[in-house]
Amino acid sequence: MFSSLPQLSIVVAIYNGEMFLSRFFNSLKSIKLNNWELILVNDGSRDNSLKILQEWKERFPQVTIIDQENQGVSVARNVGFNVSKGQYIVFPDIDDVIHPNMYDRMINIAKNDNLDILTCNGNYVYADGRPSRPIFPSNRLRSTGVLTGPQWLEMALNSKKFLHVTWLNIYRREFLLTHGYYFEPGLHHQDIPWTTEALLTAKRVKYIDERYYDYFIHSGSVSHATPNDTIHVRTIHNYMKILEMLDAINQKYKDVTQNINACYWQIAKEGLGIIHSIDSIQSIEVKKQMVKEFFDRGIWSLIWKNAKNFRLRWRLGRRYFKLKRILNS
Image (cartoon, rainbow, N blue to C red; front, side):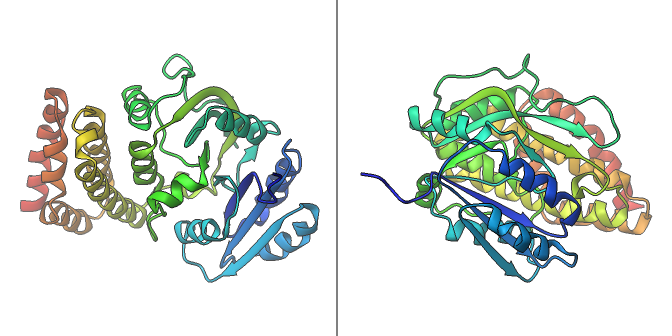
């Protein structure tokens, strides 16, 4: 029987995106896929984004525009997810470009292999003119057959080149609904715990080393803004929360994660990133406050517990005494 439900829901969070929207929509116009819906969540934009969304609405077959007060990308994605109807769902970013064959190709594979999650490759594209390069180097991650989620997560993390992102993935919507997944409100880099937990519970996943997505790196990107003390503090707080979430995920799925050392390694690795951010703070007083919170909140103990090999502990040990000197200064 023919189903009127869309094959794919494309959920897009928009905040002050007027300079990117025309290019993004033009890439959507070129996609080779029938029967899909577009859900646009305007997250309190202060520019002309909402006007542009309304101008483009008639150019796509099934469009839902939701206008809300600014609550962050996680809430915007959750709102879009809640009204989606597609068999599969994706979460692209507005400052990137989707290749015409991406979703048609991925849905065909996902359907044929009955996948919960399918991941493809993409390109880093630089606004300053540097040559583009693949997000996942082919010599580190190659196309797979059908794997369990934990098998792929272990393989991907062990490559040391894996990026926790949602926009290279297509998800079976029923899989996400069954597990009650949602994006953590107010959390930057929420893709890290999201991707980890989704893969730990997925039964059938696959990776194809085919590049269908251009991820643009530019000065307007939040992830690549020039850091100052305020940004460092925000990053530290976000990653402290991420480490706590990853630890909770490891405990929740202990029967699986206890056999995947990489699940513990990634906590220690992200912990080293927190220490680097602390070291980059210019204000001595702010730095001291962050070090105090780092220890008082138990983040140091969490990182040390998850550093399972000698090299990681040696790297952490060197930094421990430096942190203590800051705290006692």
